[in-house]
Amino acid sequence: MLTLCLDIGGTKIAAGLADPDGTLVHTVIRPTPGGGAAEEVWAAVEAAIADALNAAGGAVDAVGIGSAGPIDLPGGTVSPVNIKGWRGFPLRERVAAAVPGVPVRLGGDGVCMALGEHWRGAGRRADFLLGMVVSTGVGGGLVLGGVPYTGRTGNAGHVGHVVVEDGGPPCACGGHGCVEAIASGPSMVRWARANGWSAPPGAGARDLAAAAAAGDPVAERAFRRGATALAALIASVGAVCDLDLVVVGGGVANSGRLLFDPLRAKLAEYARLDFLAGLRVVPAELGGEAGLVGAARLASLR
Picture 1 (cartoon, rainbow, N blue to C red):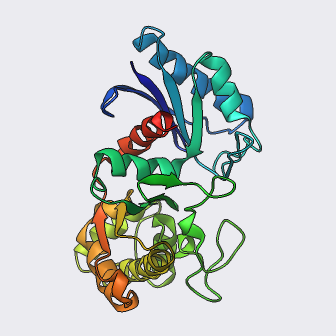
Picture 2 (picture 1 turned 30 degrees about the vertical axis):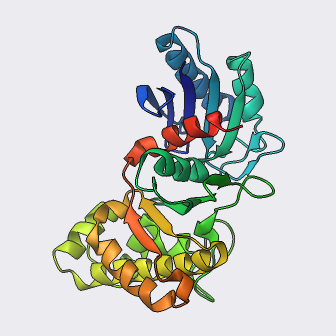
């Protein structure tokens, strides 16, 4: 039997079919409607579900959902920061009505990314794992003791909002000095522009990475600053959760050594406790499929 898996975010809505081994045998991706009206976004999700069910011949044995958050796991609702129309949206109930008669599991997109990498990707041999996505934001999820750790409301692993800089830049969450306000792609670009990086209008994190690779000193500093914030976060979460592995994906992570070299160097400075000596940071392997694979894994857990 196949599992229907969903990965819902502010940019795209993905639906897939996964076999029992976690291999995706069908995937459809639709853009998230830009207006963000609740029913307009739901209509796009419903269309993606219908496409997947059609490909499956109408038969799936479970549904797993990874959604941008915050989420309310007990209530089955979601209020994604980047989908303005969904505030307390009853996502689990809506999906259950669209796919009647099978169990439906909801989780945050960060924990689904972590589960996907733990099951089929870079975290296959790690039981205490932090999965992170460093892109337009900084998200994360935890797998502890080989199982997802979701916390009281389902939002454990929101590591982008760990504060690493006292009096630091404002964050979209309303706080200041969060990792996301320093190490996300747009945040690094804003800092670089404010500190003298000359780039054409519309230049983004990919352009910043190209400039840093070409030796632009401001772009290099922007990456070092972002990597330092990430290292402080990882050292802190590593100490709290006794991690053995951190898997980092997302667009900014695609810059490779520009990010990972200074991150690992700073982590070696920060993570000085003996039990953190073996903590490794590695690139993700599944790319954009991690959330779908993780959602399928979530659906299989009882």
